[in-house]
Length: 182
Image (cartoon, rainbow, N blue to C red; front, side, top):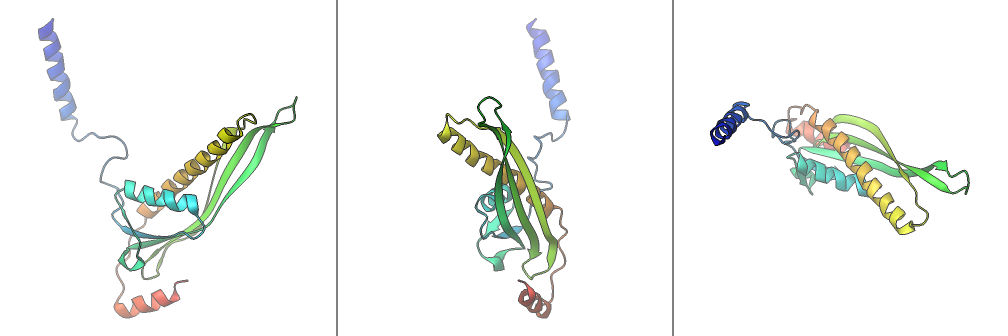
C-alpha cells in the first residue's frame, strides 16, 4: 500500500511541476503597474488611501513629489450618500440602508498631457441596519465606506494600467504643457 502512495505522490508532484509557472490569480508581475504615481486627492479621504494601497499592491510606487512621478492621478468630489432601502412594516423603523460612493478622477502625465479624461465612478452596497446596536451600525458604515473605496480604487488602478504611456516631450514642450495644467 505504501508503494502505491509513493507512486501517486511522485506522480502528483511531477504533474504539478509540469504545469509550468502556475500562480494565484493577481499574483504575477506581468500586468503589474510599473509606474511612479503622484496622487492629488484633496477632499477624498477614503478613495485616496485605497488608491495608494492598490498601487503598491500592484507593484507601482507612490511618490509624494510630482516631479518624481510618471503619472498624476487627480481625484475629485469623493462623496458618500445614504439611502433607506426598506422599512419594517410593523414598527416603521429602518431595516436596510444603501451606501453609495461617487468620485471623479483623471490621469495625466507629469508634463500635463491628459491620458484619462475626467471619469465619474459610482459604486453602491447595502446593509441591514440594527437600531439596537448603534455603535455596531456606525462601525459597519465605516467598513462599507472602506470597502467601496477599495472597489473604486481597484477600478481606477486597472484603468491606469490600461493606459499607454506616450513618448516624453521635448523640454520646450514640457514647460508649455505644465503651464497649461490646471
